[in-house]
Image 1 (tube, rainbow over the protein chains, first blue to last red):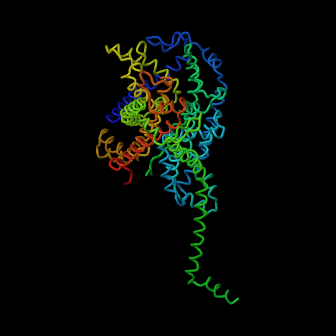
Image 2 (cartoon, rainbow over the protein chains, first blue to last red):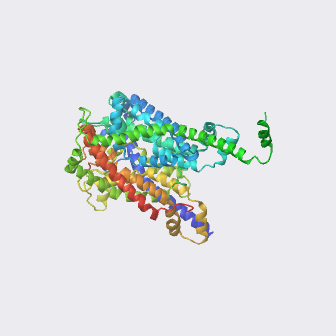
Image 3 (tube, each protein chain N blue to C red):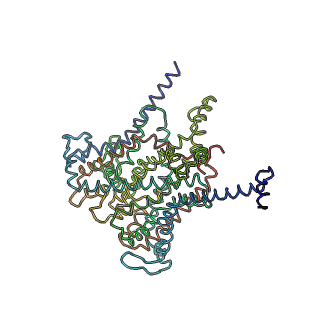
Length: 277
Length: 322
């Protein structure tokens, strides 16, 4: 009796703490959605009105006309999807090689990989920009896509940790059956690493989807802009269209929220630090 | 013919040790070579990526840092001039100060908040997926929108924060408009968006075997003891990882202050962070040599700090099963 009551109290207080904390973390989202439905005059009022009246649905239509919304959406989607595919294709196979195959220099190269994770992006930013400039790729989305196909150190690290945790016996057994290394990787090990691959895919998706500095550097023509760059266009010298800006922000955020909600458990399972050395 | 017979005999006789062994080692070597080849083949995309996107840019930026290179004109070799100029550049020192200030507060606070939040989100209660998504929300909202939201929340006139403060009799500061309060404001905003670090802590908490807690329960340990004698020590490898990433991230603070001040670092350059100034030099003033020198100074600072963390980590990072 006492035990169950104690449990109930703990569970209740757990929910209470979580709900109070959640409230603080919800504010940005609530405000974003609420502003997206307000006329400009109601945006900055105090005390704030959380529920807009009247609800101005037309902000969403106006926002899509204010900036070339569908062009930006298409650009963002292409960059995000292609770079996510790139990361998901390249990183697992590299990580598998680090985790399960033996070759001379493997450990040194892995240490270098971890070291590379610590290079600030700004150190390589200028030479990379000049490289892409020489290749004539500045002003195209390629600089935002190509690198993902050649492995990203943080993702390689995460995936390698995950592969390390998978038993060698599966590989040995498949080998005795005469399977090629690529088949072992593709048909046995990669499916087992699904949570980690998913985590990497989601990380890359979110990074590309909201990336600001990359498009700012490389996309010179406004026809190629992504949504995160397009958001800036709602702020102008003449005044800012907050409601419209938040409408686009909401449309940008909702798909990622849905993705995270359904995948969070697998996502977290995919990140493992056991066996870290 | 004659030569064949002993060989055939050898094959069948039990004393064929040496011969067979040679055969096996040859095969093994061949097998190893096969594995080497696959290993190299599988890792080859990353070797190209490492060279093209990391190693070559890294080393060419050393070279650029010794030149007066800009996109507009081919640079000349100027030796250490860029570095000398940096030492006399007041705005450079200001940006160093701002960045260090931010890092000193943000990194430790980020770890404390991050671990605490992750522990909360690791409780076994219903609806956790909803809570986790909510805590992750600030990281999903685009930065430009976040910047606008914070400008509103922290507005001295009609902002929510000062509104709440005034109801309890506190006259709030002008936050982003004040030289003293602009950086604390940014620290507050950044702490709010630590969802990514929390996810990594959550993963670390999931790796701690349940057995330890069961054993502690049997021994009558309370929540406090379990947290400080099981959870925190076993989480140290993850804390270590996030500490290193946190330092790197803090020194690379860019998007939030950039969008918040529209690239100006106002008021009075109190929000001009290192990378913002670097970006301005490289891509606004086209002083790419100068910006490369800044990038290298940053790299050396980060490397020194990381090395320091690595050295001390032996004292406080505990690995499971050791």
